Length: 272
Image (spheres, rainbow, N blue to C red):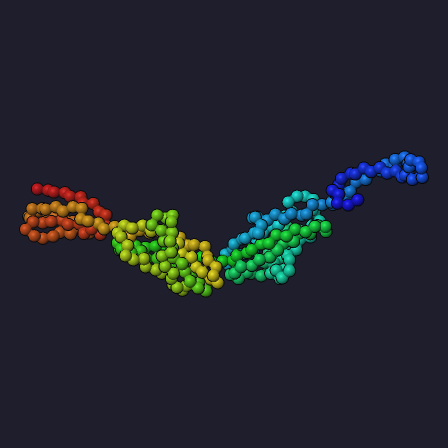
C-alpha cells in the first residue's frame, strides 16, 4: 500500500471466502491489523546567514576576515557536516564548530562566490554567497575656496592609485550628479565658474577592475564679496588713524574706506 503520508497510522481488516456451486459463498471471520508509516528522521537543516539568500556581502580591500557565520534554523541538527562546495573550497574555509567562513588568503579586489553546504546525513541545504571586495576609498578629501568663483579639492589615493575616479556634486547636500571623471592618479581638482557664496557637497569614488569604492565626502563654500560698508568724511586738520583693514584716502577731506576683504568693524573716536 503505497503513496501514504509519513508518520500516519492506517487500520486494515481482511477475511477470505470460497465459492460453492449452487450455494452462497462461504466466508471466514474478519482479521484486523493496523500499522503506521515511518516518520522522517529530521527536516532538512535550513541554513541561515546574515542576509537573504543569495547573500551578498561587501568588504574593503584588506578587511575581509571572518566573512559570515552560518547556522541551522533549529536545534535538531547537532550532527551537521558543514562544507564549502566544489572549487570555492580552495579559496574559503568553514570551521565545523564555529561555522565561521574565512578566506584562505587575502582577497584581491574582485567578486567571489561560494556555496555553503549543511548535511545531516539524510538531507542537505545550500546557501550561495557573493563576496565583493572593493578598493579602499580616497582619503583626506578637503575643499577650500579659491576666491569667489572656485572651489579647490584635494585628496590622497589608495596605494596603487585607481583606474578612474568619479566625482559627484550636489548643491543641496542630498541629490548628487556626476560632475567629472578625473584620472585615477589625480589628487586635486578645481571646480570653477561658481557664484560668490555658493555651497557645494562632493563625493569622490575610486574604480578598480570595474568595482567602485565607498565614497569620500566633503563640502565647501566660495568666498562672499564684501562691499564697502562704511565711508566717512573727516574734516582736514583732524588727526585720524585706522587699523589694517582700513585705509586713509587723501583728498580735499580725509576719507576712511574699507577694503572689503574680510568682515570688519570700525570704531570711530572723534575729538575736538
